[in-house]
Length: 243
Image 1 (cartoon, rainbow, N blue to C red):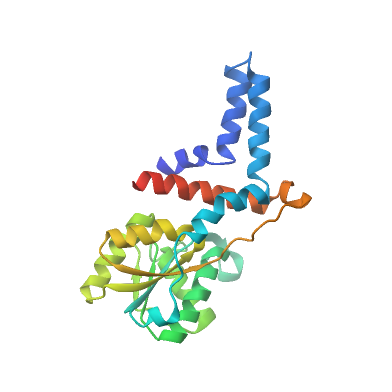
Image 2 (tube, rainbow, N blue to C red):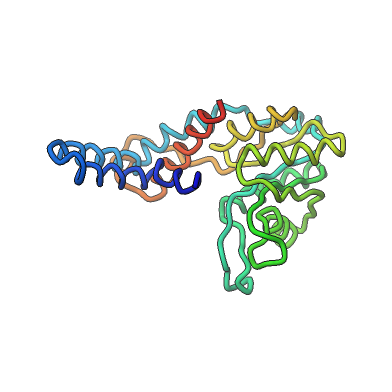
């Protein structure tokens, strides 16, 4: 129910709802409201607005240095969704490009530090074509990068649960300082969640979005920009809800 509600509180769902509201409910003022909604949709679809939304998220958490990595006892990589029923994998699920990007940076840090790796992400069910995301990530971590994982946290359904269940597993091995790998725009909320569970977090953000200038193309509609606006708004709502 919460996931369904979120789909209609973020673009493009909220835009569609507003347009329907304008056309059906507020007939007298519908034209003005409809024009306003279209303009908002256009703005969110431009790389200029997406950059303005993303920039505070991606620059608010300092990136930990390699010198700081020496303090860490483990690497935590957060999952990033799944691709259902991939034919090349005999209809098993696979990780998304975003998740693969997180794995790639996690592998780089693993090779430089040789720290044990925890992958966090639930959903799905073991023994099916749709296993937990941590299992999918661990498979890719080994098959694509030739690296092992020590822990797989498979209960979580959101960022707060990523932190809750991962912290429990890490505390069992007396681990209190971790290098956290996730997308740059997701790092502020993820870092806060893990710190709320008593862990010391060294941020290793990845997947920074492209910065737009002020040329004509930066004000033209673009699907990538709309996706970036979606994730930025998603994070702002999550940060507010967490407070």
